[in-house]
Length: 148
Image 1 (tube, one colour):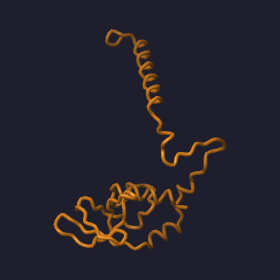
Image 2: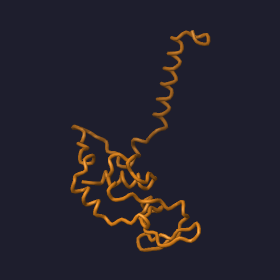
Image 3: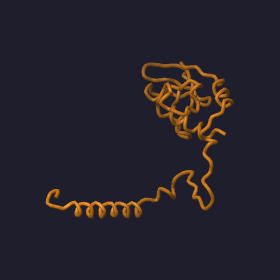
Image 4: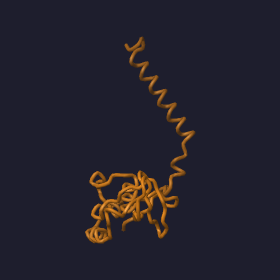
């Protein structure tokens, strides 16, 4: 007996509450229809995900050969892609001038994030990344799942 109710009563109350939550979620949620990249499977087995999970030695060597300068390379906010890779041109006080796709822009210093060395491209375990910031995590996921 809990608070004057038998345990059977609590079970019924919880079942009723859970059913109410399920039906209200069904009425208000359309996330499965609106998710980007969502594919409704109609028949057959699930596709094999191993092409996105296994990074070959050739891919790693190609990524490690990319040019990298820890003092100049940075991530900045970009309207088109979310984040863009840029090169630090100069700093003045709290502002950093960054060259992004051939144009120079000024950013606040805290909006400029560091880039991981190429050896961490397509890292399986993101806790191994040197710089665990939003752009680095996003870029790692993006390159990993676009790799073929």
